[in-house]
Image (cartoon, rainbow, N blue to C red):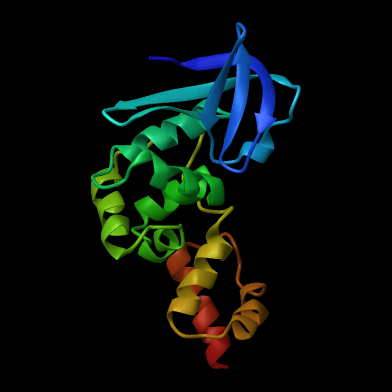
Length: 186
């Protein structure tokens, strides 16, 4: 098992990077390949998946991303190929916050995540997820979450955008929804 590979990034593609270390080029699947730069020497935190039909490396810029990936793939029915897009499109604190608040709408916005898998993520990870150095505050994603909730209630994006800027960000998501609904009903 590998913890990380320190090497030079020699290639970047849409789903993977190639890291050259010790004269060997390692193909590493990563959530955001374009966050790396060709020619840079860097540490890539990796996780190796060995199965009957697969021997792959999944890599991350930070140890926290790797920890979140490991938590996600521990969920029943959620494999590495489904976990990567979650990390590519969501912030770690936003994902943690959605799990703790049981926000199925937020989780369903990720590719290949339906109702059943979103509920399974919450069931398997709620109360068990803590990543060193990251808090599930939700402040970074609270407006995204509020917008998703209001869309789910049937409001149009134009109406939502006009109201969301007037809602204080320091409120809980429940209070934000209440405030937004008051403003929408005026």
